[in-house]
Image (cartoon, rainbow, N blue to C red):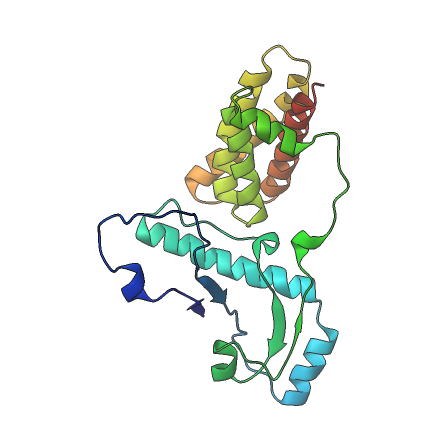
Length: 237
């Protein structure tokens, strides 16, 4: 169940097609979206629901719900032929709640009982040698370029994390060739080259419509190896 909250009045937003003069960049009210993922089978009683919530693995429930939402977003992206329909992660959520209630109440954001998870993005992360904010500045300033291999490996990782082995295999097939071309005669090529055959086999499986058992693990190993050598390259290793 998807709903839009806090949207500006349509009449005000669409009141005229001509540009209007402004003197300052004032904050603009924006809508937020609420996604509610419900069980396919109801609880037998309120007591059963309360027991479930008390014992629930909240992070597992959150991750399962996000997986369902991302499948819906993927379907929307394909149905609308819109490449800019983006998937979401726990770190991007404004708030995550797990609870129970009647169908109509939950659809409206009301619960019989619920708990709110701490924000994933709120945890402090120990600063690493990689300093991504410094590279971000270098990329924006034109002192460095994003190599296609970096984008391709990120896309392969996203497909793996989303449980899409066929897409991951095809993406990984192109990514590994791009990484090897980037490394060229660098010694780190030897860390990636051994995965080439397994990735090609998985990609061929994907083209035939089914990924053989064990291929997903091989893809995970290949993507992890590519991520590692790209990180070493960013750090000047």
